[in-house]
Length: 189
Image (cartoon, rainbow, N blue to C red):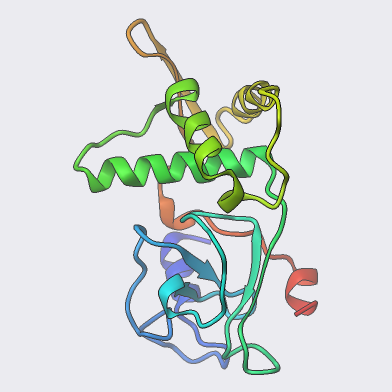
């Protein structure tokens, strides 16, 4: 599926008609805030437009199931955060670091595991996953293994004398980061 097909797919309403918006408010996506993808209609909704109390979240999360009120059998939104894998948490951290740099006018795509990625994950742990915070620093090594294991598929890597080991997203198009909803997920709602 090419990008234009994906954009058209995102803008289809549950009834198959073409809409010119994603959210209830009719506004376009905003990568600076939390947005949730409906598992049924594949439309994006701004956190501020959702009536359901979501709790603490961060942008670019992939570990949730959300159904908008238009698609819900009850007419009420539903949201469930699930445990994130370490690679998912790395993607979320890198996406937020990239978006923050972009917002500050910096074209930065590569980040240090120790100076950027792990501090981000440590600071936003409870917002990013349902997994209990690790009491030891052994998860740092798990982050390292995850980043290395998925180089060229999920992550990019470069090393320099002044910066050391740097990681980024293999696909830097942040609009492509979303939960992986399968048929079982959407039928279960």
